[in-house]
Image (cartoon, rainbow, N blue to C red; front, top):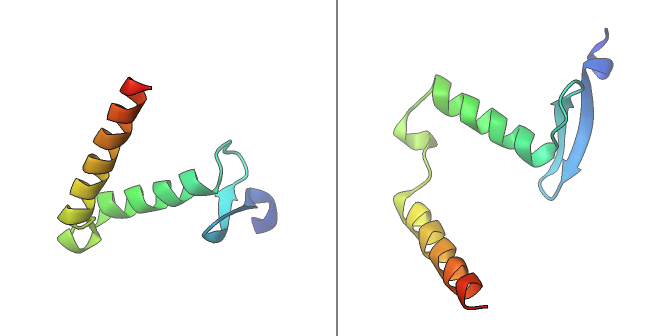
Length: 71
């Protein structure tokens, strides 16, 4: 099997990325897989999201849940 047959090109808002041809997921999941694997291999603090950003995601999630509960 050649390299072209082992991967397919998926596109999202960040651009193009190679996804293994035998996987059913798309570009965003492939980006997450790459990031997750790099965190497992090199679990340094520099690869982690900044704490204020994590907190902001929590605040946003809570706000969305509150609105969804009301409506």
